Length: 335
Image 1 (cartoon, rainbow, N blue to C red):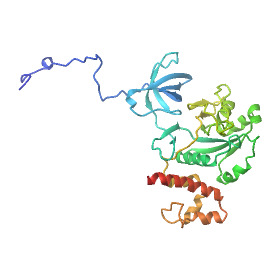
Image 2 (cartoon, helix red, strand yellow):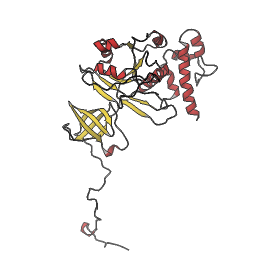
Image 3 (cartoon, helix red, strand yellow):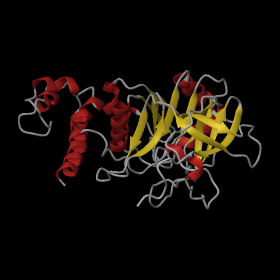
Image 4 (tube, rainbow, N blue to C red):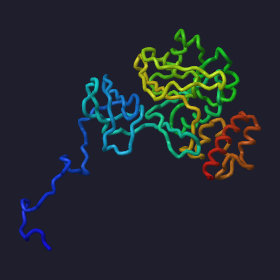
């Protein structure tokens, strides 16, 4: 049955009123061509601090971004109140393409990826030589994540006044990874900060390390005008206490680079890394794989790496570390 006649016009069509009083939904999204460019400095419970020119503003993610989130280091497009005044709120309407993404998972069996930082080009892996004891396996995992993300690694060894760096660097000296050794006296008088700044110039560097290694203390020395809380190492467990709870991007005083302080980690899962790419994090072992059979897992009887190490080309501990990582990855793949 026809509701309207053959010759209806717009006035004859009854439009159902919108009870909410808002505009009808549309699939056409605004382009926001006039949006300002900004850099995400930190994220705290859905609120993001964004640097727009020389102002820090508070912003939230716009609805049109959907599930796409912004993380520290992201370059974003922002609209709304950009004055930076108290109680103002802007909207992030676009996340620009990322040049790099550093990811980790809680463990190797966790499929949920956590983006640590975006657009960094260097990863400073901070570890103490004592109090707490160094954890070479965690260093290896961070190296794997750095190479997988396309970041250049930098080893920063702290607390050399308590223990020598020679033993640890016996395993990493052949990697060609740049490293710095610091102690508490150098941090206090500024010598350590000056040497570290030379390695950070012109770069965006993310600092990672487990709790208690002096990571945030080092960042405070690099950016003295922005002091973050520091903790201590538990004498019973030998572990540090988390004092940094969110990542924070800070500009170096001379404006030559950025440092991103991240929360201390006790594990660095590599669920997102393809096991075939793990060998790239071991450049001292990679040349030895040329004699491996096709699709070699590097943990089998015919693997050429055993002879490569036996001939003295690499430290046996490095091969052990590689196979420990691969074994963890294989258990995850077989589940």
